[in-house]
Image (cartoon, rainbow, N blue to C red; front, side):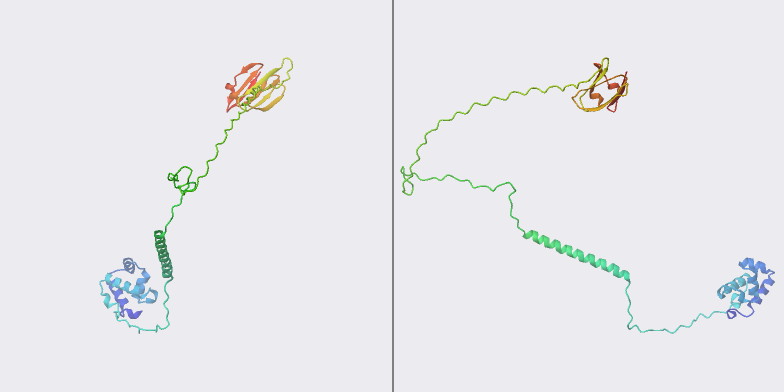
Length: 287
């Protein structure tokens, strides 16, 4: 690397620094270098400096700082570089492979073009078939073909008893003897009307003397549950139009479904269930 600098470049830089009364630390601070690097440059100790390219820059900046000519410190670089001999190799037998991306692009494009051609050919063939197709009208199901009207045959007038071709006419059939009509039998009497259905019988309830009776008459099917003071329980789905009764001792705890459509009596007195109805079910206690 000494060949890149003129002999004695370090001593000249040191003499210029001392002529300007600059310390090594002052130069290092101005050039943004370390004091060791400045000392190595002045001692021409290039082994402790970076690459030649960087050292040339350090020396040029150092010379500019001291107003010295950098061309007298750095050896000129020959710009003429040797041109290497061109090496040619035969290309016979060398296969240049195409990139795979080209194959991936060409294959779908060719497939799409083929598909479009097939669709166009099929459309043209169908249009040709429509023009040549003849469809006979078919009568809808259930509609018969029109029938030609049959006109009566008009025969020329001839002599009585003779046919147009001269043959004898057939004798007319003898008149039939009328048959007297047969009297139809008199209409049967209508069956007697059925008696009206009897009202549903109220089930018999055994009541002890002084017992209290609850009576239920629902207009719709309703579930009724009664528990008397002795714990006797009555639970039943009472059908619409039927009557159910329960005898026991108060107090009675009652649950009545479809209460708005149920008539309930207690010892013959009607009980209004409306104030006790919640979600179609009445819950109450009778003392």
